[in-house]
Amino acid sequence: MGTNQADDSAVVRVTDDIALVLTLDFFPAIVDDPYVFGQIAAANALSDVYAMGGKPITALNIVCFPEGTLPLDVLGEMLRGGADKVNEAGAVVVGGHTIKDSEVKYGLSVVGFVHPDRLLRKGGVENGDLLVLTKPLGTGIYSTALKNGALGAAREKLFYDVMSALNRAASEGLYDLGAHACTDITGFGLLGHALEMARASNVTLRIDAAALPLLPDALDLAGRGFLTGGGMSNREYVKEDLAIEGTLPSALEMTLVDPQTSGGLLVALPPDAARRYLKVLAKRGVREAAIVGEATAPGDRRLVIAAGG
Image (cartoon, rainbow, N blue to C red; front, side, top):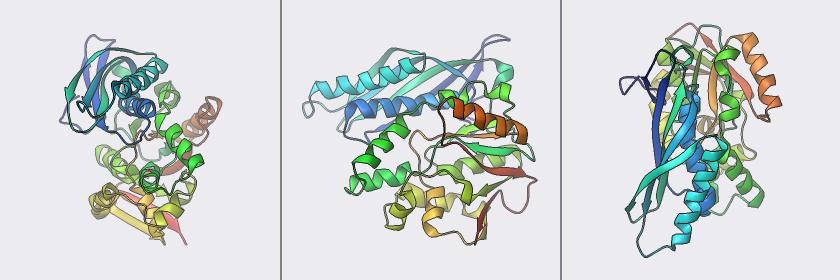
C-alpha cells in the first residue's frame, strides 16, 4: 500500500506474517510549552500507525530549529516530550535529523508492525456499519481561541490533554472486535476524512449531528468566530458530496470540518461490534467515544448530515 491509495500509512509486506507500517508527520509548534508540543507532535505521528491497526516499534525525530534565537533547553524539552510519548506507545526513538530553520517544527517518522491479514484501511466500510468516533471534536477552534486569549486555563489544559492522548487504547484489538475500516481524524476534519472513507468503500456515510462528542464550549467559540482557514477549505472540499437533512447551525457545521491535531479514530464496525467496542473503550478510559453515524448504500451524496430541527 503506497501513494496510489489515500490511506494513513504506507504498508510493505515483509513475510506472510509481518508487514511494516510506515508514516511521517511533522508541523510547526502549535503551543508555547515545548514539552507539551513534543508530546502532541509524537502522538499525532503515532496515530497513523494505530489507524492501520498496527503497533509502533521505532521512531525517528524530524526537527527544524532556529539558530541563536531560542535556548537549546527548548529543543531538549521538545525532544523529551516526544520521547516520553513514544515510550508510552511501547516504541523507542532510535535517532533522527535536525536542520536550521527560522521556525520550530517537529515530528516523527514512525515504523510499526501489523499482520498483513489484520490490516485496517479506509476502504472496507460495509453497508449497515456503525461509525464510532473516539475523541471529541474542536481542537482547531480551541487553538484559534488560545491564540486570541479566549480559551481560559481549564480549557487550555483540556486542549493539551486531548491532543497528547495516544490512540493506542482505541486501536488495540480493533480487528478482533470486528472493525471493517478505520482512519484518524486530523487536518481534513471529521467530514473530510469521512468522505475519504466513503469514497474508498463505495458507501454513503450518514452522520448524526446530535451524537457528536464535542469539546466543551467549542460551539460557543465557533459561533464567536474562533475558526481556522483550514476549516473553510475543508468545507469547500466536501460541499459537492454533502447533503444536510434539517437545520444545521453554522457553528456546528464548522466544527464538523474543523481541522484536528492528533484527533481520534473513526472506526466502522457492524452494529453489535460497535456497541461492544464502546464498552471496551470505556473500560480502557476512553469515555468520550460515541456512535456518530452509519453507512448506507451509495446515493447522490457520499456524506449526509442528519441535523434535525
